[in-house]
Image (tube, rainbow over all chains, first blue to last red):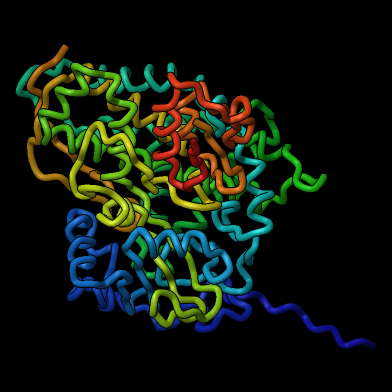
Length: 435
Length: 64
């Protein structure tokens, strides 16, 4: 008779990483996530005061000589805000792992898919696996594969504008709810071959993943189960009825002579779906928000459409929507900060883009800024995979909106998102002129 | 003028191809590729400078 040790079921939530899917450093207490008292020592990007005022928060931190803010929230989090510090984290894959890129109360445990693969490859992967997983996904998002989508995005934007009905000068429309939020979700849903009528569901998944980061952990777990269940159904449908789309591509592509594991396929779909929606939706919304308040820039784009080459990048620099995150891989002294293994590190590329040491007149929007090394799509090996698609969507969405409505102004209170993706969720604009 | 591309630094931001397609192409993975041997004709010098000053990874350099 031999003794066999039954493998124990991994714990869903533990207070240590060992044999756990996820773990918490400190027990969850909703009271820990109250209003921020001090941005330098208590930063919380999910605080309702952060995203609407983020450029002022970064300026305050920079001016007070704090290149790296800290918070005890989320079990310990650092937030570098200068271009140099953000760059240094992004380039240092030894000390900072991408194992999880969304800061939440819970951390991935040892029983979750570990580095170097991670749960949603390749964004959650570290070298050397990262390079292989990324190489699989680069071709479908390369410029020459994305360019042909321009006509489709144009048709989509025009349809959304048509669906606003008869808009007369003086009328108010919501540029986020009626326009921006529908554009990327529609495109990525089509690329993945998912039902168009599930658009609202995809937005719900995105909201649950990215905006409820300090919610009670059980709620988040239930939401993820719902997402996994939905994707398993879609993947099965693709297995049963093969067709030419990204899901099929992931099911058939080979890595080292073998097809991807079901977890890898699902993880990459989660990445494409979640990362491709509210990011670009936010960029479109922020750009229209800017134009609604800056008639001179709106007129310039109308009278001189070729300025869009530079304007597009300036929208991306000044209103970059995406803050990424890393986890500290091993204890490290970073820019004088004693970082401990498993601390969170926010990577606010939008803050780097506003650093006056990296950009002249950084807090000014200069529509024809010619030299613009902005980091809206990240720096280093994790450069946004969908950047070519995002740029295309942003450009066409702005062009179509201002062609239809050449003059507009803000018409009321704007509601901003909460968390790592920054952009307007409610954006009332008054149309002053139509074509 | 000569333009240089460090393919190790390039992360496929695609800024050079967008701004100076006469000097840069992109491959099937979206990585930048230098067209020709890096010699820049006088009429393309401004575009070469533009490509260099818009690369987020500092992968493009110019020499005389």
